[in-house]
Image (tube, rainbow, N blue to C red; front, side, top):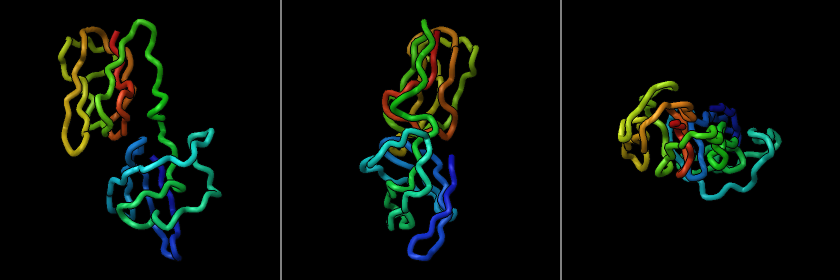
Length: 157
């Protein structure tokens, strides 16, 4: 998603935000990937970028702790997914997690119960299946995306 160079107590860190949702963030800090819990989002900027003038907290450089002031908003906000086209029905994320694979393409015809995508949630791989048959008209996620519970994933018409 985005990469930041931060200095905490005169020590430089390079932090890449791999995924971010309302519950957790996946960060790569100096080459080490870790998942951190988001306790609370303290502010919601109008744009999708956190203003640069906000100082990073001391927790930013310490593995296992979230740094609310240095996190950007998600590229596709979990609280405002793209609306379903008229006539389409969304396949929704049953729980928060990360998309592993998308097993259909826009324009594909699917049957009820057919595998649509795989996602990881709570260290488990979950198969997300079509809740009804039809044509895939829109795919709203890609591998690596973090999704919130109830977020639209795929639209089937």
